[in-house]
Length: 84
Image (cartoon, rainbow, N blue to C red; front, side, top):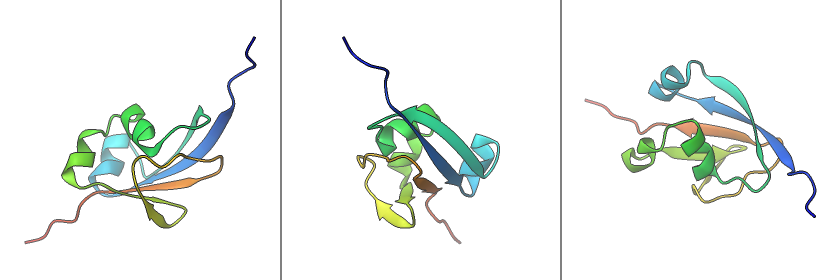
């Protein structure tokens, strides 16, 4: 017999075109415990941005998309910078 699945809550800050895509800059998500950054990105339907050069930071520190999230984390989604 298994108990209820543990849940975590994370804050997501999206910048540039990502904020437009998500309908705003700041969001809160409730996720299953042991969710990775990649799984969060998949859930919010931004997977294609990984191949475009998406940078992710957790609590101000750059991280890999395979990093496991913890309750209370602040996840920043930063699109690649382009210039002319």
